[in-house]
Length: 91
Image (cartoon, rainbow, N blue to C red; front, side, top):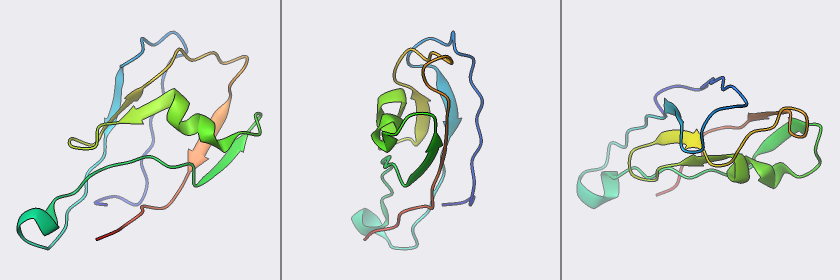
């Protein structure tokens, strides 16, 4: 990852599919071995809910472009979450 941390804010009345931020990463390998793909996983959560898997229900990431966007209607009264995690690297 080109940055160790990303932060985005979003209004609860945001439309589903609203782009929030673009993740960026590089790989020094050449050709197909150097291609970067993005995925989300619930590494940790501080939340009023107990289900850390809500991460992938609320936001989505484009595997090819790294764009993070809303994946569901957000409701502040029922979901108040802050997610943190470390970049996951694999070859």
